[in-house]
Length: 247
Image (cartoon, rainbow, N blue to C red; front, side, top):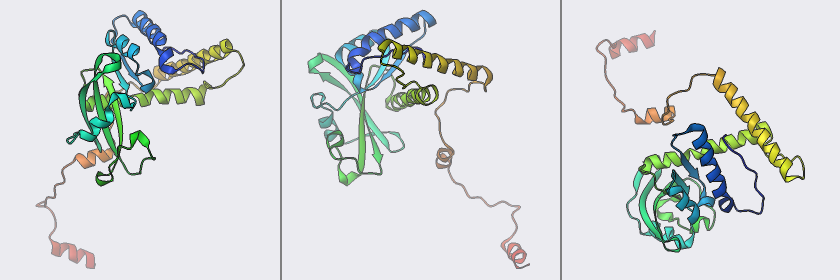
């Protein structure tokens, strides 16, 4: 983890996020010089000033909230053809004009089939019982990735959440040791340093890093394989098998 900053509980993530993102980008530029940065952010950062800042500096993907003024609901209702993205995941992309922000934004909209009925009024009642139950999501980006690659790219946020879980359960990151804001902020920094130190040890003495690739289970390999039944010339005749069974 490169940077951590404690914030007051009465400050919105997105509103307080721009100074943090600016400091983080300056830090990575200083430490890694010409490294290319990419950012994956949740819906709290879907704000006009953050989009404007990101478009000039880095590639990004941000979850889009289903606000009524954005118009995602009507786009989904009008859509008749969806492109295959992954197992039980479909999507399409479009360019939206956001009038309050006076800005065009590329948005990819996805739907994922689920086996349970979604909660009442979840995501504006977009579900049609005739074609099953779906959960919808939207991603704003100016990345050049296609629908499938963008879906997997945004799914990488799960790794971020796992790091936070390790910090909380292994390094007491979410502990509030005092009633002092400065002391609690220092505690978070120390927890992060301890986490980074342990990860550095693991990388130094652990197995070599493997090549990056899409992670697939053995079930995917079996499904992707074409079954073929052949009869070998060396196979015993059926009468021989019967005689062997009787013995």
